[in-house]
Image 1 (cartoon, rainbow, N blue to C red):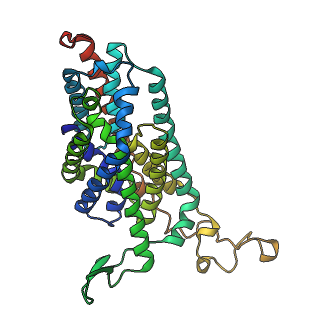
Image 2: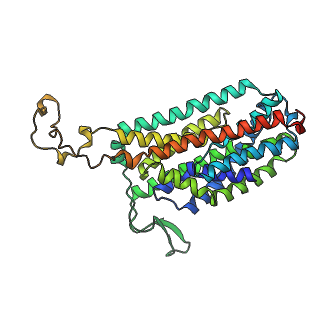
Image 3: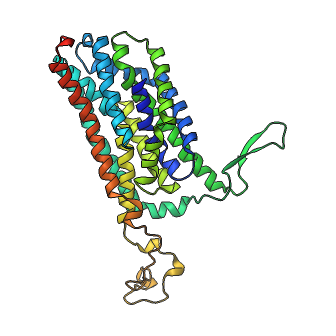
Amino acid sequence: MFVGYNIGGSTTGPAFGPAVGADALSKASAAGLFAAFFFVGAFTIGRRVVDTLGEELVYATTIFTLQTNVTVLFFIGGALFIGNRAGVPASTSMTAVGAIAGLALAAGELNWTVMGQIMTWWVVAPIIAFWVSGVIGRYFYARLNRRVALVQSDGPLIELDRTGPIPWVVPGPNTTRREFIGTATVVLIGCLMAFSSGTSNIANAIAPLVGSNDLEINRGIIIGSVAVGIGAFTIGRRTLDTLGNDLTSLPLTASIVVASVSATIVTLLSAIGIPASFVIIATMSIIGLGWGRATRTTRVSDIPSEDVPAASVGALTADEGGEELPSIGEEETEDIPAASELFDPSTTARVVLMQNVVPFLATAGSFLTFSFVPIFGL
């Protein structure tokens, strides 16, 4: 339950940080949705990942005794707690796999083939997330934002219509159709990310206990999911602040980009049986989008036509197939955000550092304990 509590704290931010940062959801609503969809993902597909971590990562499941399980879970939960207290969402998959691998390595039972496949995707997937989001932010965001610009209106997004015999949820009095659809989209994508988190992260809390037959899998899923929900409502608020507000400024359009890229990569990794580094993928997507937006240059297509002077030095004529350009130094730059508004280097450094330190602590602590403490008899 302590591990599940910290999973809820570290993964609520990546799933719903964009929606909360864009004021599409309150923190309490985000925590409730995360807990519900996490349970659905854990109960349906999550049991498959439990088998992967509980059986395939090690050659002999006999190393999972009640004593070793308690120790492994202690290092998983303890390392995640350090990250959560720092307000940085650490990767539960990397931390859990690291602690289990430390046990298996000390016992000489680590399956290096499976470990190599998992680690390769842990390196490749965040790089893909960063560059896909960076390219979108640098070259396509301005055009995308003009098409789906989602400016929140005053007043509630939705309200309850009680005029009919059955109360019905309808858009608020000032809510536009585009705002309603866009907000619903980013929330639904967050729910998909919570579902994906359940499919991969429930194993991090219960796989050793299920693998040693000390806990029945359905009971473990229920206990773990309840603990995750508690973590989402309590310590998860810290990671929601970090990923929704501190790391980068996310309007709703940017939230949709981040959530779409992250959910797609996590779902594809889950489909091929890789315990996804959910937190790092989402974080690197946010960093990539912020970097891309902060470094994009002014393009003629980004300048409103009414802001382009009627004549300018060196401009191509319409007959030459060009567009009239504003004089150098007179370009419209109001819509180009400053780097400091979108991409906080100090927060980014803290996030990247802790996301590597936390799994290292779990791995090193597990390996050293099982190698040099004689009571385990490995």
